[in-house]
Image 1 (cartoon, each protein chain N blue to C red):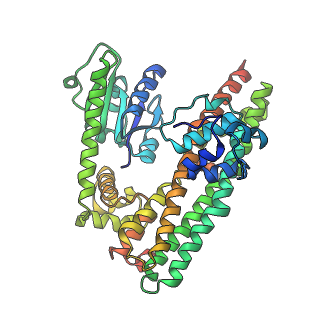
Image 2 (image 1 turned 90 degrees about the vertical axis):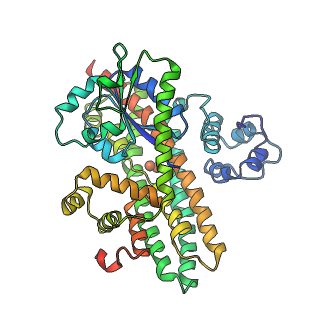
Image 3 (image 1 turned 45 degrees about the vertical axis):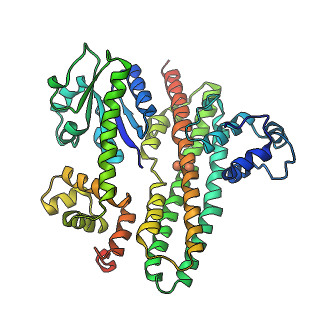
Length: 244
Length: 199
Ligand SMILES: [Fe+2]
Ligand SMILES: [Fe+2]
């Protein structure tokens, strides 16, 4: 069932509790009473079309965009991506890290094996941090610059050589997959590690890993399938304009 | 189950997009990269390790003159030719797994693709049922965990890079672990390598 503007926001969350962190990223706070999705969006100054596309594709992998996601400004997409990065680095990763540490500290019999998981996760955290830093310091400013130029429909010599030197497609080909490692980690915990005696703790680590993986997948789709093609089209137009 | 990955090499925009949308509609299948020509093929193959390569048969001649490329060895297993001329048959292109013509009927195209995908899914399934690594695979895993590249492993064990890649795919399918760090953890947990070996 698709999420539509006239549904009650509370019902949307009753049906899809995995949307909770997504809704927070739009700075929408709980306590909606019986307000509909469109009312809540209006009150919180959220672009409703963008909200619908993001939430629908989040809950349903086969969701086909109603409005071309491409009609949204790059700045809106970038803002959302940044919020999501923040959520990973400031909330999710530390949370999982804490749980892993508790297992290492409490499970004396298997802690030498579990410290492999700890190292693995530390390595992962570094990789994800680098990935995100690179996007925020290089890619985001670049795509915003492209959008600004495309709106004015004028391209400076500097921007021209910038595109020539490192275009969004260069980024696309270097954009690495940060979900794979999480997938492996789940597999290792489920299949290959000796069992923890406090299974509750291990389960919550696993559940968080599943959620993080799903979220990262949606995030990467937004980057690869929406942002990159959109910016590539703008670059193409600008280059053609420069030559003309 | 991880999806069956396709790379498409086709100059015509219309044909490329057409075949991509058909593939993406089939269960378990996904197009990971579309290319217009062979320029980036080697790096694309390394990065995506596709299960199938869909390519215009016009490009086959170019591959003939291509040196040092992984693609040649692989095409008999993974190559699907697109014939945009007047209906070719497999016999005329013995180096390929399957041929799709732009004149094919809808059902023909779906059947051909679905059969290939089903076979792949089945064989992967079989591999994931057998989880025991062979001695050869253990040796390769040990070198992977030590951080050696496919090429280095190939040289050390007197194998072709292509064979090493095939072994690695099988290891990944058996264990369900893709990344080097994941494989390293597995190798340590199962005493295939000791932490000391990693220094
Ligand atoms: Fe990102
Ligand atoms: Fe990313």
